Length: 269
Length: 349
View: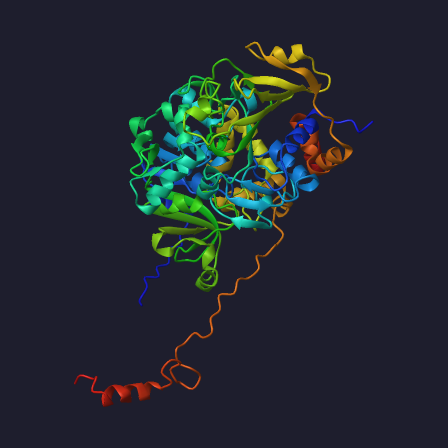
């Protein structure tokens, strides 16, 4: 029996396993950075880790606060700029990227701009940043949803997944053939996209979660893989790495913030 | 060659007073890191109004300017959320109050506007995937000019384009500059150089002013040449609480305190009163910081050195005349060259 693990550890490790050796990987902040560090340490030593701010081939020393974090500038191979980071994506040099989701529809189209009306939103989300560009031209995109929602119709269409499903993405002529979201990872399971209809289905389910738990978040009749397997358990090596590299992420944001504030308060006394 | 080497060093107060006007288009040069907060705070303190603000990615800088009421229009790709689902911060509040108009781009497409502007082109073709999205379909105050579609003259393919951006003034923080305005920056390049160079006026703040010789021995770090710079402001810790590579780390705790305060209008106003309006300049801001958090607070953030390997810019010689005064190509002294000129009848009376 291997070590016990937190949900966040499972998510990070499941993401990391999508990265293959020798790939060029665009990382975002938070979960993807830790996933990239883990993959690089354990199974993709030749991967080139990149940030859209133009930091190419960096060594993750500590978890990053943002995509231009000074900590990823201490020793890296190629200092280019944002413009070139995207044109290299456009030209097909990025194998995989990771994007967070505010709203997602059944074809993997994503909203990260606003909830409600665009000009008078009930929630103003961060916006596209590089998301719409990356999901358009990276060879493969991994979507992560934590705290976001599944919807029939996006309040704002920020980033293109499989558009209207079927072959509509490839037929549009706007994207490299075969690109698009490969996986959606949530706190409950792993979703993948049917190769014909391009509709997402539940491919794997996390330990302790039922199909009914998953379905209650999804407004359409969600298809489920048959047989449905459980998300692979992390190995001890993977758990040890994540806990040492990013204990705050392993704990989760709330627990980590509570402990950090207690620590800071202790310092003042 | 005679060069106009004008000393452009001045205070943040003078720089903002002289070079930022109400109603102008203002661009923040920095991208998510080491942002020009002393200049941002000074713009707030001087109560500039009616600005159209450009930012590649808004963090504390954009929210502070909007909290201060300086901004009518915002062009960006990304805004910070301060309070999770309970409150998004200044941009969300201003949109809900109807005091802010906004134009959303993707990171590349925003950057392409600066690159077009920097090089003097009227527009730039951009990545066509955006045409499937609401970023393309929904137009704000730019209307039809947000994106226009052309037919590629070579392939016939439909290409979206964005118009050049040429803001009136760029504010930007860098690691070091000389007093003439040669600005050096390293680390995450983002769209920093393009943001500065597409603008008409450039206000540079820096961690330290260095001798001109330092610049001349490391020209690959220079992102803005002196002749483009309007003002140089020396402002140590001028980007705090964001980080500056090689100088200091991000002040995570203080940044989180800002985010918490900024989640509500009242919290934001109190934070602005204490840290922006309550401090006349960066020095009094830093003094106040040390009063509140102790003098060791900043020291804990200071970067440990990790120097770049020096690059060899050397050449075989630096004069055409060797140590004996002979020209390396002709093998003659200057007197001998002149004698040749006379003997060959090349000299006019």
